[in-house]
Image (cartoon, rainbow over the protein chains, first blue to last red):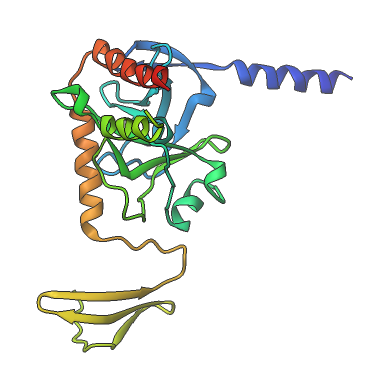
Length: 170
Length: 82
């Protein structure tokens, strides 16, 4: 069956397809095409960036990732999953935000908070008012707006971690 | 800009399915109730500005790869404690 065989090769080639990206943290690297996420509306203040690549920080055991603008080397955000510094996090966003990335609920999404690292790095904060939501299946992303009163644009990450440790009974 | 005067409990319609009701008026604060389909997002305008400013602050963060590695270690210590 030559046709079926051709199809298998085609799928294989697509999985392996790599593209070059100029990154702020690592210079020029190759990533799998599947790592490129479309942000049809960009993110607030950067609506001209329509594609981001999510990269591991490269440090073993690190909770941080990079959200690198595909066409702008110097535009890269440090991001973190809220679960990695908060014991209890709940994504509360509008239907509109879910629909924009082709998701029907939180179970379809990867959720990240953008991290701001000030002069004293241990005062780093995470933005939970505008969580970045990504539908990994559809490769669609968006900065949503939290509808919960519990979240703001600057959550001190170390405070949250310390809360967790205390709650752990130590 | 269209300007409409409304009293307490009066409302305006935006299109066929968005209603804005004046629920309470106290001094310089007005409480508005909004009835809109779920797919319409309704947020205070400042929220957009706050998120935008924080995105700009995040991108302006100046730190070395070493800083990020040190910060990662803070999480590891936390995990070891548990």
